[in-house]
Length: 475
Image 1 (cartoon, rainbow, N blue to C red):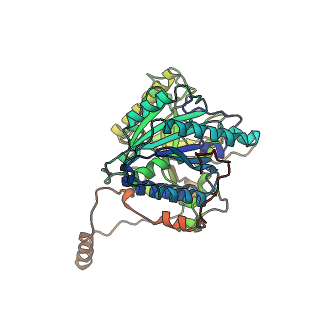
Image 2: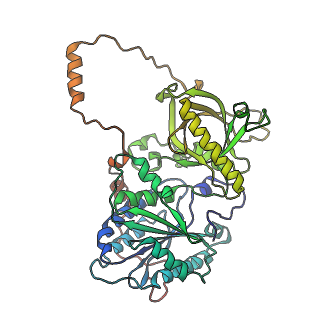
Image 3: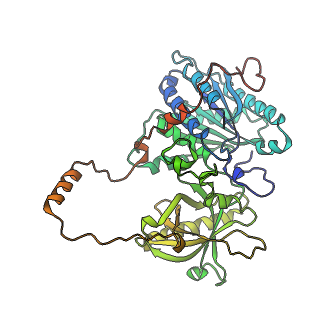
């Protein structure tokens, strides 16, 4: 089994950097716990697919299939393309909602292994029907088992039951235990989002184990990770730092120190979603905000996209009005093609940079080096970025305005003396506001999910699979 390795030929494009491998989701049902998690799981899936099917530009998810395991395994959705198939996915979620909630059965010991084997067979059949060029996209499969049973027991059961099974085409096999807890970190978004990385561990040799809470927000966050570019075939960005600042690390003073990083989105751009409030600002190109740092990275597989640090700034020295566009996250790369020693050293230097910037209360100003323009005599325009440290082992990257983009905006100083009547009126109004120490987006709803769901046609009854079902297993 290969963790994070995919076959890649030729230069990387924006489609490749966004699209994730085909996914098989197996819902491992046991009563009576199914009654407690059914509605949360179905709502989270509905919300997630309303986003995944609505995003403009290249498809971030390719194929998806869903199995349930009760007293036997059953395929309720064979592999389908995610984009353009919201009606089928919604019908599948509706079937989950009506599954038996009461009783006392437990899944048979072999049902879960059979579901995985059957899903693999379905995947091979689907791939076999594709053209040669399209089949290259479907070289490996990620399998996720959602269970309310003790995760370690399920992992041991799978390790024993699959030891003689050919899983060379399984890129990742993951067991996710849904606990009975509720979301405990509603005052901060970060602990919830990072829990998937910090709390996961690898048991045995090939199976990942993760725990999530039984609430809609936690499940949504888990599924949204499928929209990230988590490929590890190559690092995304080279962050170049002046070597004279690291004379103890780099002997060659003329050569910059290079930190190899992976780039990750912090937000989904509203411009990629139909009918949002920002829709009037969308560019004619339906790729919308793909023409940002992420797109530049996707075009530079031959020579990695470079951010060259040109100076340091005080953390209070950049006005927020000068930054624009979507923020991105830089992390030390996990590219599998690098040697372990290089990965470890790169990570240590990255963490040291984060600590040093925090201690000094500094930001970095970096210049994005234009991609090779061949023999063109025109000098390409450059984009500049500010790089901000955080308490986590990551850096925040935001585009910053340059001279050419600036418009005149006078900012006179506030008058020192204010009329008492006006001051008292405003102070009284402010005193009535509820004060929160931080902004937590997980507590703010925009009704986007319901809006997106309503833009799709309603499912018309049961939809038949596009691949012939195996008797007794697939509807």
